[in-house]
Length: 191
Image 1: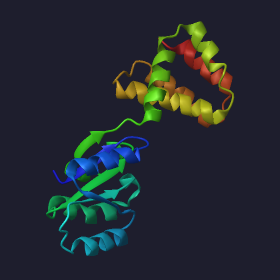
Image 2: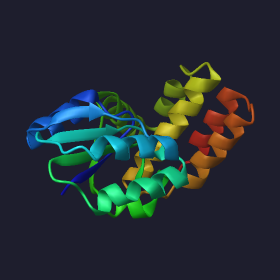
Image 3: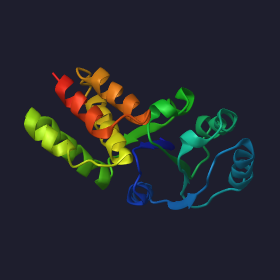
């Protein structure tokens, strides 16, 4: 395989270094956002690489569709000694044609693991303990992030039982709803 899609938010630089070491390749970061970037990359890789090289394109989901379509040929016809490591927060945000030509590697950052553990502990609490927990959340951004983490955690585990409740709380918080009221309503509605 000459192309890897590392999925996570955020991707630790250590993950890229590890992949580079596995391939015994030097690492070269090359941002791709627009078609001109792909043209520049193509000019670079026309040169023959004697050493294995891992070209890292971070946050590939931010590239335009035109840029990704132009980049596709590099994945379809890989050159010897050139590997690609693309990063994105989710496969859903990347063109399916790109995803299909990459080995997808899910990466969980240290921060994500800590958040997952926090959410898992929260979900195991009884209703009163959950109310005490959310009482500590005072600002809007923290509340939104907490509900986002709940949504991602449950979606990752394919547990959609309370998803509508989480999404309602998320929408209401984004619409400037009262933080304590929205989180309390969410907890009261959980099954």
